[in-house]
Image 1 (cartoon, rainbow, N blue to C red):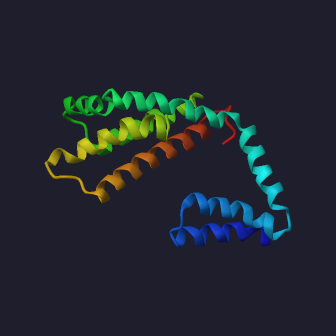
Image 2 (spheres, rainbow, N blue to C red):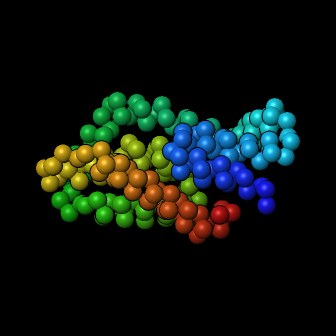
Image 3 (tube, rainbow, N blue to C red):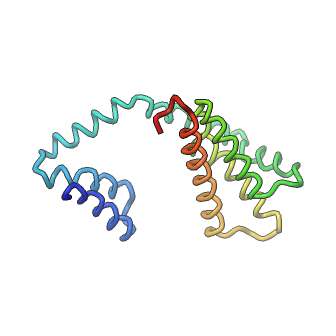
Length: 170
């Protein structure tokens, strides 16, 4: 039962609005410290687990490409694309992305979408433009809500797509 001390650290850390990275790190290390494992051994094990997951580094390879595309006007082109589609709405775009994300993940292309590759540079500018069609300036709360909805649609689509793909242990 004492293994759940990490979960308690996680809940309290997020409830007190501490830095998420620090909260998660503390929640991962706390049970080990509680049971008397040496701190250097804990950190070594975290590093070993991270380096054994080599595919994690592939995300970093896409970031320079996304940055270059954004510098060349990707956000503007995405807004222009949505501007030409008169029937587009926030809900329809999110539904379409959910369908595409789930379908591509279900056939094994889980890395095709994602937060860094699709949501931030492509989906969010579309949603912000569609929300601002009424002529009102978007405040930070509305922008944050749109970004959260886009991220959640990506996560839900990937999760349920993995459940459909027979080769993915979801």
